[in-house]
Structures are given as C-alpha cells and as structure tokens.
Image 1 (cartoon, rainbow, N blue to C red):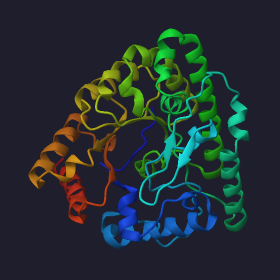
Image 2: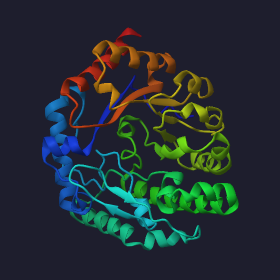
Image 3: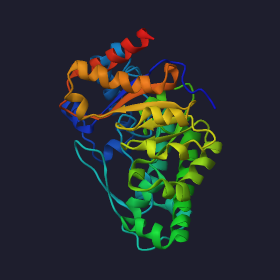
Amino acid sequence: MIKICSKPLPVDIVFHPDWWHKNLGISFDESFFYDPRRRVEDEQKMEQLLYDRFGDLGLGEDHDKQLPQIGAVHLASGYLLSEMLGCKVEYYEDAPPQVLCAHRESLDFEVEDAFRSPAFQRLVKLVEELKAKHGYVVGDINWGGVLNIAIDVRGEEIFTDMLLEPEKANVFFQKIAQVIDKFVWYVQTNTGSSSISVNRSARLFDYPVAIHSECSHTMISEEDYRRFFLPIDQEWSLRHKPYGIHYCGKDPHRMASAFAEIERLEFLDIGWGGDVALLRKHLPDTFFNIRLNPVDIQKYSFEELVKNISERVAASGTDLTKTGLCCVNMDKSVSDQRIYDIFQVADNIIHSM
C-alpha cells in the first residue's frame, strides 16, 4: 500500500454551479467546457474568487496562474464518457451538464467507436488547441464509473440484464471498463492526473490517485458487486497505482468485506451515513475521505457540526494522515461562515491529537 497523504486531515470544498453562477456570473453552457479561451480564463476566475473569499484557508492557490485545464476541475460532474457512448447531454447556466439516457437496445458495441465519436474528437481538439498555445495541459475530466455509465447508456433495463442475461451484462460492463481505462490513460498521459475532477481532494495528495466512481452501487447487492464489478476494481488497483473508489452513497459499509479483497485500495470516498468504524476494521491502511452532507451541514449549529465531524473522524482512527474531509456541491445558500466552520473544526481536531 502507498501512503498517499502526508498532511493530517486535509479538507476541501466543492461548490455547486449555482454558487458559481450567483457569485461569479459564470454560465456553464457548452462553451465553458470546450472553448479553450474559457477553459483558461474561467478556471482562473474561479480560483481568484476562492482566493479572495477563502485564501487564508488554502483555497484558490492557483489564482495567479493561467492554467490550461482540459476539464472543469471545480465541478462534480461526470458526463463525457456517457456522451462518447451515445447519450445526449444538456447544458445549463447554473447546473452541471445533464446526461440523457440513451436507452441502448443492444448490449453489444465496439470499444473503439467511443473514441471515434464526435464527443471524444471534440476533447482531442480542445487538448491540441491548449497545447498549441500553452505548450502543455493540466487537470482532468470526471470519468464516472462502470455501472454509472451503464445506467446512462442502457437505462434501468441494465438491472434486468444482470438478472436474466448475466453473461451478456458482464461483457457489456467489461467493454465499458475498457473505454474508461483507455480514456484515463489518455488523460493522465497528457496531464499527469486523472481524478481531480472526480474529487478535488485528490490534488492534495502526494500521489495522483485514480478514483473510480461507484455512486450507483447503492442500487445493487454485495453479491452483484462481487460478481460484476469487484474483478474490475481488483484489476485496476494493480494497474492504476494508487487506486481509489468514490462511493458517495450512504451505505459503503455494505461493501466493506468486498473492498478488503482489493489488493491495493489506497483511497475510499465515504458517503455521509457510511459506517466509518466498520470500514476501518476491514481497511486499516486505506485513506478515508469522509464526505459531509452539503444539505444537512448547513442546518447544523456549530456544536452539532463539531459533534458530527469529530465522531466520524474519531471512527477513522488516530492517524490523521489516513483521513480527510470534503463537502461537495455546496449550493448558493451556504454562508461563507459555514465554510470557515468546517475548516475550524478540522483544525481543532488536528491540534487536539
């Protein structure tokens, strides 16, 4: 196992697009994602706003740099690989891109078709234009996860497929995994990272972690995970080092014993409600990124905030280099003070150890 973090209890915040739209006036239309000028200028504006409001917390550290970011590293949004596999995407002023289910009738497709798609070719064009002007590119693009994308492409019928045609479903998943794998290597080869857009906490680590999103795994059993997806995680953990899993649902502990069978699981994103102590029992050396609920956390008194964060951090163990905190999709109603509160609680925990 690689120890991915040397900093005790790192904290990060990701704001919802409506926060950015309200406070900065940025529109998250299609050009935000694919116009090379906006890729640089808007990302720097976002960094500058973070620095102006929360610079003393360490946010906005790149405010004085014009970085050629190939993807929106300040948003929690996975859409491109689904589009590469046939889904349509709608864009909004104050919301992340919305994937429209393709309802693909067949489970059969060619992996290379995804890379011949207009969606991927548009990305290649963006990367080349940024390289031509700046000489290099940075950042990455949220690559989602195997089941997440399968649902986007096939719809809810994929669960029937898993039951009635498991062999065909497994081939379908394996092909999606091949698309993801090739995409991740393309991005990481160009930029050096793959998963800042999956979780911005990744930028705080000593090594570039590859993080597989398993948001939809709340919808399947542990048996289904073991049958269809655990082998993919096991293989990827050996090929993408260090390797992690993003599980934003409330029940990652259901998969604790299965996760323990992944030989090198260096990172686990733990959804609000996850049993941290049980997960730590099964994964003593894994870095736990404890997610805070962006809705509930705004309702807490400061004392309730302290209690909730402190109890979950304590359940993760005494080595604070194995635990971090994040709150993703804080919307336009959140106060600046609540952001400061989160960092203050973390700082108090560090100094009490």
